[in-house]
Length: 581
Image (cartoon, rainbow, N blue to C red):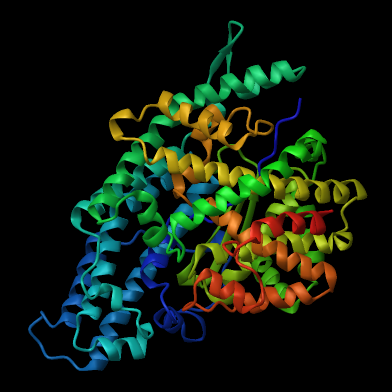
């Protein structure tokens, strides 16, 4: 019996979230000043393994930023010129970017081996201190917003209107910073959990999942063993998520939000659409895509999600295949791929000690995107690399500036479809090519259902009163959502496996971004299928993000349809069938 392969990749927001929340405003002029052509650094000239890590001094960093804030707000007792004030802002910003760079580098190395005590300790250091550094960084924006030089600072550094939301102050109080510290600690606790070592008993025999899986003969064995496995892990990781939910709800309340969903959308994820809009999107997916999912399930389409695991593919073959297709498709993709390869900025590993997710992040000090992939060792890794290469290219071309999480996911998902469009040039075997085409069709349909289901689950989870939050109650919520969606195939273990879904821990309410992004990526893929180069042209036009515009503004700017438009999801069902066959 084959285990289902999960390939949904993530962009870890460990250090990106705060930057997106604070500086991803119209223009991002300050970021562009410090990065890109004006960067005080240079593009990476060393490999990832050779990047120098040095733990920053938290006390010195905070005190330095505070001293620069006093120059901006005039409380240092001296009279300063505008140039001196702007230099103080740039100094503080540089200190923040240095902090971010070291935090990101530490996290990357921790994610490669979550059992390495050195990197566990460094990650815990940032868990403890980053909330306070973020607090001072927000205070810098407040000082600039309340300064008599506000308009000049916006004109020279930030961009028009960027500081408006800080005129009345920020939200990161000492109490909120302390709660965010606890939040980070809980996320790290989950990330360091090794589910492969969790032992449970089957028919009087105790062992871990690898021990028991060796005894799987048929479907009954499979369901029995994995059912007990998920129950066992749920006992360990379920309480972590419950404490995270309680902590996040406190943060939202102290920040003045009615609920955590609103906080996550408008602050943590910097979205320009609301939970209500997301709920309507979910309802439309249930109406138009779930029937497509159930029909495909009855026809056996999702068997490929298991069968693709039987087609082995080495790390070298994965890289070669993606380079032959995407690296030859456009000179901008070629440049990005060569940069990634030259400096070994993509780590593709297979070790169980690795973080159980794939992600792309950005290290400002080196102006370098970095990708870490937990490989499956089979053909599905090619799609995972294509996805993450989309994030990498976005980071490479835009110097890591993220104005909108949903737009960022378009950048990655689109390249999965582009890769499939040119997969005949990949050098992969016919067996692998045929399997990947079927696999993407199945996973694309599954994506809409699974991510909307996960979103609906989170909505219910964060609505439960704290005194009623128990693992038993949350398992009940999972059953309720499954019944509400009317699906079972592919979600047999969700009653307990919710406690292993990385997104619920890393960033609540992120999952709906996969739905919004894929809806746009499919339209790009349809254009490319109709005319070679047409979709790619739209892709790069879109990647020249309009940071002042909303998600829908950017999508409509390049002639595509927002998933929030009337009838969009109904039309999307037809596009799925047209693009994927």
